[in-house]
Length: 218
Length: 248
Image 1 (tube, rainbow over the protein chains, first blue to last red):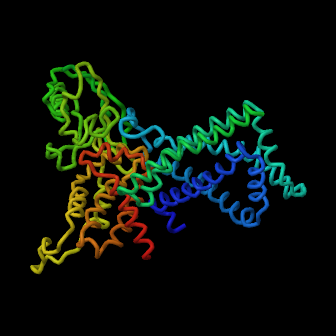
Image 2: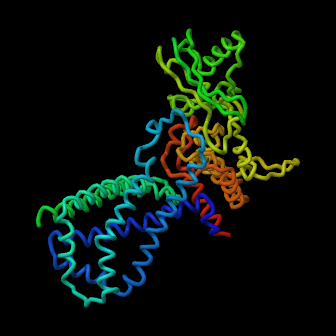
Image 3: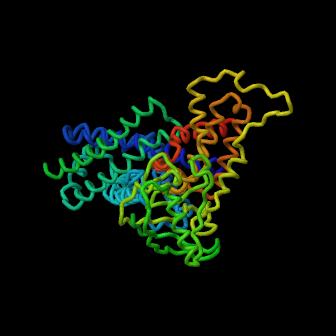
């Protein structure tokens, strides 16, 4: 825990784990997007991701570790930060000097955590059960049907859309600020931060499009 | 100008404080905020009450003594000024003004509006200096060429007056802007390179030991800093720290 014991190391660790999750989101979005125009391509990608040894044995555990690390570290930081001001202000005007999203990362993060619970319940747990518990034979054509079936429910679709809005809020501050955390703040960083803000809106908006597309087209 | 002041009153460090309301009249727009408090204190003294205690010294924005959280912002609603430079013309007749001490676990209240900011001194003592032999063999600093851009950035970092507004504004009560300014002013100069590794490690360690929070890049510190210290300094300190830890 040596390096993580300093405030800067914790900050960098949050930034790097966040950047890793941002990369994963881009990959997840790209595969999901294929479901809106080519069910066959979506099935092929999903089958590859679901059966490839490297993905299953290495990338998936690394991803789960990254998710858990980011959340646990986020909660640790929140607790430490609250203890750094044990007596609150009577009047605190945060809106005068900072954005709402930057001050409420813990709340957007908690919504995303709750969403991950739903998402794992919907897709990941059934997938693990199908493959590794029930031991069913590999079926390269089942993924598209499973995806579409989930988005019949207006409640589930609504929850997904709401969660993606919070994901956009979280990324809008988190992605751009991760460059500052790792010490990158110059004229090139300014352009990179603009890209991060576009990405933060575009990717969740794309996920919302996919959810609504399958809800209204099936 | 007639105002209603809601001021944090606390007898001593161990006492339980509370907000107390004071109506005040006859305040001129050209008065500074501290002069307005002087008027209040004269009234309180004349009435036999205990005056409101607050920190102040130079009253021209360079000593870093004055503080105060005014209507939810350190040094009040104006930008790039300290409380002593804040004019009452920034307020309107009939306004209610909430005045509190800077709040942070590392800045405990001493009495009323005075907080103990010696945590900043200890961070500075941990490495915010260069060791120079001043026994008569000192080399003129100007004999070592310094890139103009670096010299300017170093000077800008050195304008930090250590008032603590960055901590007061930050939702996490983080002292990263202060510490990074003190690290940056030397990190940018050749004279600061010899002790660069120890400096950033020791100052960050001390900052953490004091109980300040973690920076989450809200940028509130930069906006509220009366000297306009930039967030670039925090990024620079992060780089310096990562470089120092990688060197072991």
